[in-house]
Amino acid sequence: MDYPAKISRQVAAVPRSGIRDFFDLVQGRDEVISLGVGEPDYSTPWHIREAAIYSLERGHTSYTSNLGLMSLRRRIADYVGGFFGVQYDPSCEVLVTVGVSEALDLALRALINPGHEVVYHEPCYVSYMPGTVMAHGVPVPVATRKRDDFSLKPEALADVLTPSSRVLILNFPTNPTGGIASEEDLAGIAKLCVEHDLIVISDEIYSELRYDDQAHVSIASLPGMRERTILLHGFSKAFAMTGFRLGYACAPAPLIDAMMKIHQYSMLCAPVTSQAAALEALENGAASMERMRESYHERRDFVVRRLNEIGMDCHSPGGAFYVFPDVRSFGLSSGEFAKGLLEAENVAAVPGDAFGASGEGFLRCCYATAFDQLKEALARIERYVETLESS
Ligand code: PMP
Image (tube, rainbow, N blue to C red; front, side, top):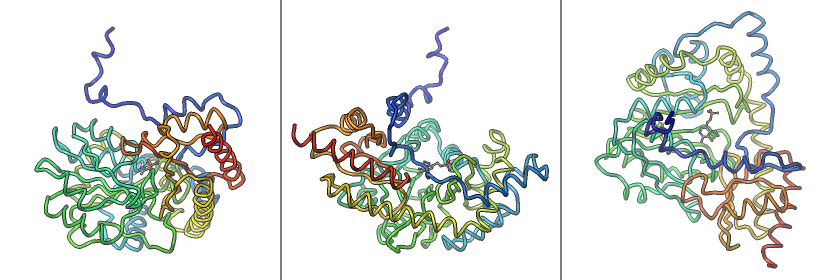
């Protein structure tokens, strides 16, 4: 059988995730400290796990409404109204999904016709390019820069917009850089979106994980933007619930309707047990979330300080749980640096080019790792860097 000929062009065109490639190298090595995987080191807070168990004990094991449990959608609308300052009608403007991953896929497939351009800032989360290609769109990355703290500058966005631009994906705070956008930049971006009639898919999965006493601002809350924004959020990061696979989209009803069509035929509904857990997270999870956030904040300060002491130039990111140090001064590509670090010192961090070509020269380190592990990882990185400098 000629299997390659049987695979759709769209799927064949998409490369495997560079993160997975790198982790194939990590497999089978003992004593590796991983700063690689982008997920919290915490288990889901116990009261949330208990809510899932209790839901099972009561025999809640059936499908829910395609949109998700009404009680959960009401809570989500309350939460989003309070936290992002944008009001959505839980009966028709909120869709509960299998993680932000599914919501992103639904949004892209609902919006794009072949040839439509999807613009996103890069380095970026690994699924934006493949998600666009698999939805028959044309990916248009806009490079962000260290000197701008990896924020998207309106001027850079304006440069790439064409009559074929349909969708802008934003992700602040950003995976992999931890970058955030100032309100001024967001306002400039919003103006361009209105002028060019773009729909914004705003992936705000890290929005609670903000540091330095800065409040998160969603582009959906800016004038004229609610009507053209699909706000994506979920429970994986702030509530340490990656394995529950629960997220949601909030948008005007016609956009949710279109996403819902795909969701109802491909997924039917998100798992009911996870929905019960999510309800508990929103009702009673604020304190545990804040404890985790404070601990990430401490770890960020420690890691940024140590990396700069070691001579790895690293900006202090305003959010998420990643740092993105610059390794260009060592005369190695980011892939060579990461591979060398793994081989010499058993520390895994992801080469920046896994997040798009503009990530080359950087390394993504996730600091959602236990403090003693972080300390040890930094000591090992220091040793590795010393060998590079003396060679
Ligand atoms: N968006 C970004 C920016 C992410 O970093 C991730 C997870 N790493 C996701 C979406 C997917 O999250 P979920 O677990 O909700 O599918």
